[in-house]
Image (cartoon, rainbow, N blue to C red; front, side, top):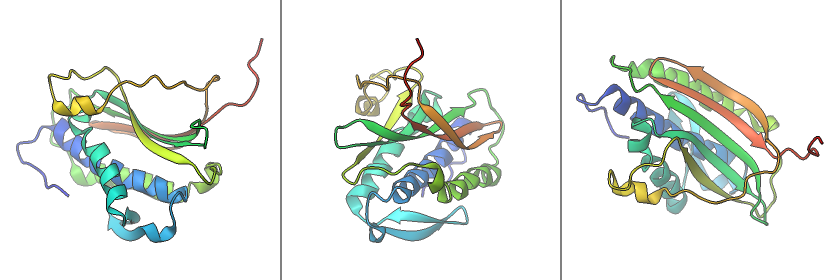
Length: 205
């Protein structure tokens, strides 16, 4: 884990803490859904909470590189949501874990790291007991990490922008069913964690 740069802006410090949290939270979600055998993970402590860490280097690197690649865009307030999406064998999304985030761009005070980490820790605790809110996923499911931007980053501002491109994936026909898991609102950062499931009801005439 990187340590704090004393010259870092409040937005930069908030984004760093948030990216570390996202890496742990996404690993926890993948563990929770049972996509891989339990032996693919090992127990670690983070923010004084027992969490899971991926043992397999490729799995660990995928999650790490995906979220750290978002760091400059989260810092600038460009990222609206980060999603962990599970697909069935036909490549249709069956469940989405959504982290909606807002980094206050006008916040100019020193970031209270301990206070922010305490708030984010409650998300990890809530995640660990949220399995009853989720739905069973197919045995041969696939999953991916997807970021949704408020506005597309300019490719000229960072080479990392080229890693994140808009997709033309079909969305669900009806608005999804949303199940809140946890939310927090503070001066430097607002975060919401919720589940989305497809709405199978017929549209009203």
